Amino acid sequence: MKRRSFLKLLGALSTASLTAGLHEVQAGLFRSPVRTNHLRPPGAVTEEVFVGKCIRCGRCVESCPYHCIELLDIRHGVHAGTPLIAVADIPCYLCMLCVRVCPTGSLLPVSQEATRMGTAVINKFTCGAWSGLALCRTCYDVCPFKGKAIVLQELMPIVVREACTGCGLCTHACPITAQDQTKAINIEPPATGGTA
Image (cartoon, rainbow, N blue to C red; front, side, top):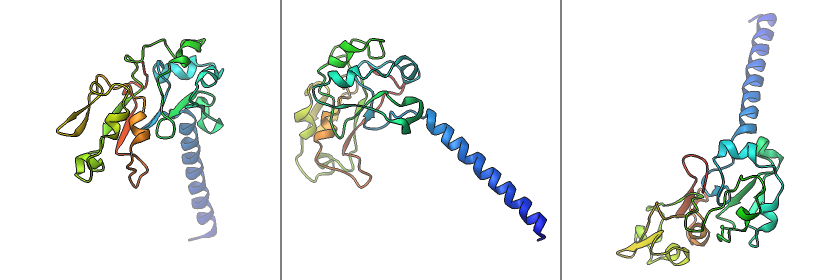
């Protein structure tokens, strides 16, 4: 290969790599931080609306007596300054103070029972009760709506999707952590990206 051809090829590859890298960075600036066990506070409007409606005032963070709400930093692009709850670290205790202080309606007033931050999902392969490793009922015991949101059938925990608030108390208390750092019960965000 001649030097000129080699330099052209090298330039083309560099341009392609740079373009791909820029697209990746740009996508990261707009990628929602909401994912498994990382949720918006109670009453959040849909994710598409939330990022434009939230004025990043931090009142929800200041009002939370449990310190479960954190503001995202600049690494989260357009979502920087918006609130998020990492339920595996500190779950939402459903005190509902954050929805009372939100000045923009990014967090809408909602009752504890009507809150839908996400839905608990049990991994039956890693759950101690479902896999037969233990008679564990930790998720059931800590659920604020036990017997409604989590029920026991033949000593096995079952999530009732329609009643689960997604508060994450079950995830936080779960004694089993898988190799990928998820728990045996995890909170999946709403399909629409918003909560109630």
